[in-house]
Length: 166
Length: 452
Image 1: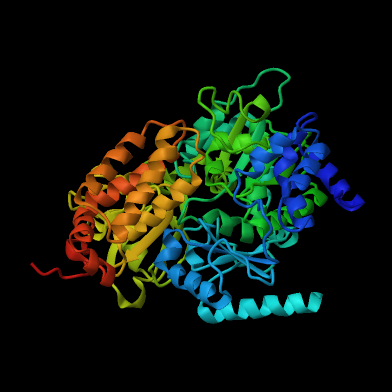
Image 2: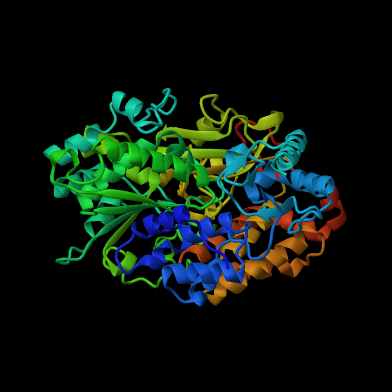
């Protein structure tokens, strides 16, 4: 059984209070973000059912939302997810080369996770960083003006952080 | 230097926080509005200003406000659309990241004008760190009496909440945004009823873009009539342009709408010219949905007149030889860029982002992507070009929301202006893999001598 900590449950109540009485379903997107961050970086059926029970809505109402939005992962992902933008403006600035370089370096294609469970590569559509292309999202932040050297540095940085955490 | 009404203080140290923002003259519009003006006079000032919605559609903001229904006993809501997702557009991000209090200031005044006591900022989920910046700013504003109960002793109560989306371009469409705010899939609603009558939780709602709401601040400070004197014709005030692609200095620029497209691209004050000494081939001047223009039609209209960076001039010639101001996402392509490939990536984007409700959009965007992929990869047929044209025609105007149009227009314009490049991909598939088509006759006639 998964469960939010008391702190997180208080946070959920705080989010629910942003919306009118009886409209607690409005808190679904923010609470799903919290759940994904808390329970392993993806949304299992168990996690989604738990969110449904917290918000007193039907599980199907959670599933239909979780499957619609691209930021929710419906299967396990690596510890570090490289979400590289591939839309027009990034393409004009060479994102294809960056995607290919990451593919070569990590030995995974878009949508795949490295065997050690550390990295997932995803291609995504426009993230609103067109002037700072090519770019990727890594966790909460954007990494912009990417070059092969920068990609190497990011990978090294992730490996270092992961080793320190272990 | 152009006039700056929004970004003037963007680089003042500490401006992201209340203290510095206030010291630099921030929140004066809240004082003026709440102490000296009625909600009705604020709506009138915004009408007089001629301010047009900065999200892309360009609808007069004051008029939109005046449509809001006021049934007895039913709360009303203002929702700020910060779901910035149109490829090429990153201006709202800049504004929120550097001047969060400017947005809050505009939101407080606008909430007062519309009678919204609970106002929401719907921000795209990927802008996670900006949501934190906004939440910090909200807490600071509240601690300093600019939010909460009885703001500045006026009797007006207002809370602002940040609501993060989760990755869906369609949620920038106002009724999809409302559905998403209610915790549902972002499927656009059929209009009418319009949000001004039945919006979020079936309550009267106004949805405005970040930049639109920030622009309310200078309008209140200087007065609607003074604001309307800036710019030209129905393009009043200043506009944020996010410039990207193959230019020397990509970034967000505030322009008054009297400068020419040529000045915007080549002046060091703005884009700084084409990167790497290349030549200009084409440009999508208002976000990926608006028609792409070859250099010759971009810098001058079909009538040979100078084209300017404003709503009227950019759309001069309609879709035959013009484009649109749109969201101000200015995407520049140099001579090495392939129009077919660029169009393909955009078609892929719209296929990915179609919500799937309407068949013409759901199926049509998929087919456009597939056909463009095979044209780009040397597997296209001559008839594919007409087929693409036919598909986009059948999407446009046949969907609940404008995403269908937004997907159709880039394909239509690419074929309209660059048909020979598409045909070349069919005729010379091997050659097309090896090299780019180049400038051909699209060259900008001002800066590039074209042989023959």
